[in-house]
Length: 419
Figure (cartoon, one colour):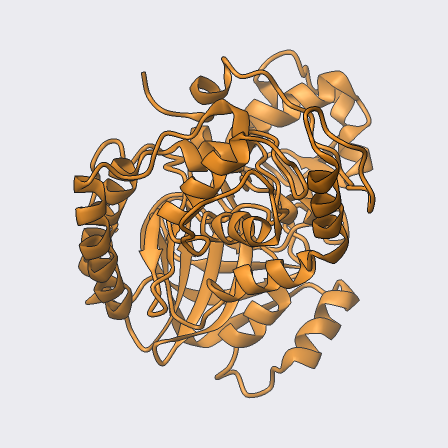
């Protein structure tokens, strides 16, 4: 059976996790008065914010995910994982650790601590007790940061799933990604943009260092973001959105059957082959008739591309763009698009791309966004862009990061993507 969240969690009793912890808790079953005092002290004194900051600092370095240095760091990680895996790796995590949070006083906390210690997420101690203390909270947050999860200190579903992946699997990821990075590193220039699909992140790299890092939303499995190499050559400010036929067929026809006012609400107009606008009522939405027409969304806050589109030549008709759906950037698994890539803080990336266009700075980019003015700007010095598939990498601090094999390329053993 292939390892995934569904198979790991199907047999589990779902334990509810409280969204907020009281400063003073009632005694848990079988807990002594001394244990209760210790737990309340932990809840009172733990620096959750400081633990999150410390965890995120381990990964928020200026080292690129894709570089020759990354290949070297992956080699070092492999040399550490190999003897560990040969010795048996970390223990299988029990179902009982699911749902654990700061202040819990249970036997299962010992298993959680052993798991965190074995992967280097918390310091090794000779004898672990059963209290989910501040060191454990910091360890869980460190683990979450390394695996690209929301850093909340709770052993929630994504965290439990990531902890349940065997060390042998993680070593396999390191082997594959070392080869992937090594193959691409020789093609890199001094200045480039990397979209790492499994991490759903974007890095703007210059002089071997990350100048900017952005959260992204990439293609869902059935509409995957393609792996490619190209150059960013144009910025469309406040663009029209011409709806692709695939989305007309798969989405718009369904939306119009559910809500006949959908196109009007989102300022989408329909045109025939001669450029004449037609009414939505002229189309039979229960058929594929709609794909014979051109659908164009007006610039503005509702536009699916937000305030800009970043163009690079490719045969897949994909691009980077802004989005009105900002809430998606806060999710663990950001695989929602139809192949294109949505960029958080895209105005900063646009400013970086337009560096050699001397008449553009951050102020002008922001003002153009706010104006809703339609404007196309050619990039004076086109910037290389690589969309990649890196599920494991390491930095010079020795911090190793992993991501889910969302497109199943790891399970297929794919190294080269002919990008």
